[in-house]
Amino acid sequence: MFKELHNLIATRPLTLTVVAVPDGKIRVCVVPQSLEDDDKANKRIRNRKEVAEIPKEAIKALTTPLSLEGPPEKLDAELPGILAKYVNKHVSLQESLTKASAEIDQAVAAIEQRDKEKSKAAKATKGEEKKTSDKTEDKKGGQDPKNDGIPSLWCTQPSNPSSESSQTEEEVNS
Image (cartoon, rainbow, N blue to C red; front, side):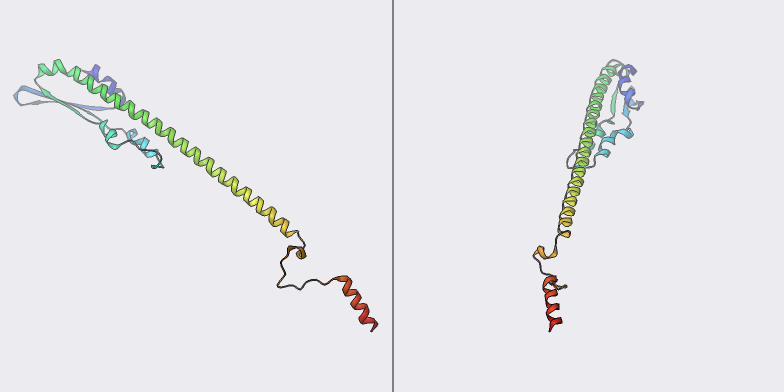
């Protein structure tokens, strides 16, 4: 009996109870215990729109008990075979969940990497836009106000220095 349970016991603790019931029968219950790591993969998922979680029913199935009742002779004959099938199904489910957990880890890592690359690209784009706008402002700032084509509202247009000097000379002569 313990030989058949060994593969299950190696990965998960279990409770084994044996009880005498009326009519000379025995009830044997095998109850796998839950582990903290059972729901660990689902806790790592941040973006549930892109990564599906492991169904809670599948995780709960890891703790499905086995209960058998019968006369001692019948249990002696059939219990090892029934336990072997139970353990094989349980181990198969555990392997499937472990594989799903690994795939979730890979998907989460890929999404995090993609998001990092997007944020780097966005920062680089913003940096390029800022450099371009700074260069454009520098070019505008270095231009002659006469050439920008926009009349100034607060300042008078500078007068032509040659025409001022000729007016001054005429006023002096008069």
